[in-house]
Image (cartoon, rainbow, N blue to C red; front, side, top):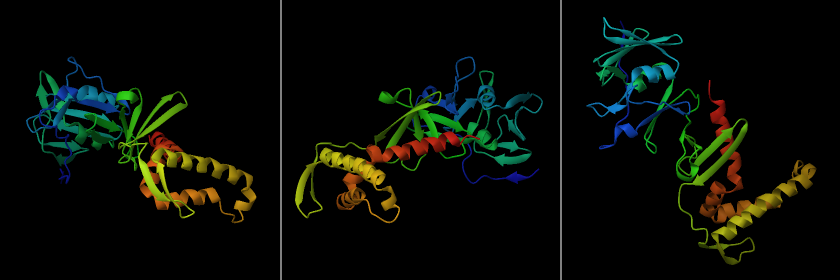
Length: 284
């Protein structure tokens, strides 16, 4: 039997010290797995890793589960992959390849608990730990994006994570059939009435509120669209759009204000829609 040592931790995530493990949830493809007292509840083992009830978690991802009582191991099958999870051993077997781990499956209250990340990844399922919501997230999405439940004013929305803008904005969306509603929120506090000193295109010193500059940029967006519609054939032959140039001037002159406007205003709508579409199209 071949032996393969994984260079990264394949097992579950370190819990924050003192965290109530019953507050930890597990999601698969946007749906929370409904663990309860009958199915068993996730818990932290002695090494601080989360252990998850085997049967419900594996059946939720579409795997078949059998228990080999002679060898004291769970046999989990999904597609062409078979994973053997021995009780109390620091390894699993993926199609007869032994993979060493730093914790082991355990028996508690008559139920078997397993290192969910190692097993899920063996089936090609991505596993994320979301520190904001304390969820283990399993996903078959082919992108590196995933969603968790929205919070606060965005309760009922999906909170999209793992996209390239996540350090600047939070993206939320919900779907009703084919209808999609999206919202996004800048990840820093902005004083819309803050006074900004800048030099306009005529070289004059101006003091404008942040909102005033945002409104100006919004107007330029609308005017640039109208200009492009009215001068379509001329633009195709090289005519420049003066309103795009005005926006570029502000972008260069007061870049931080421009970036904040772009992250919250109409300019961001296309990016948000595109990221959500990438996520939706990423499922195999």
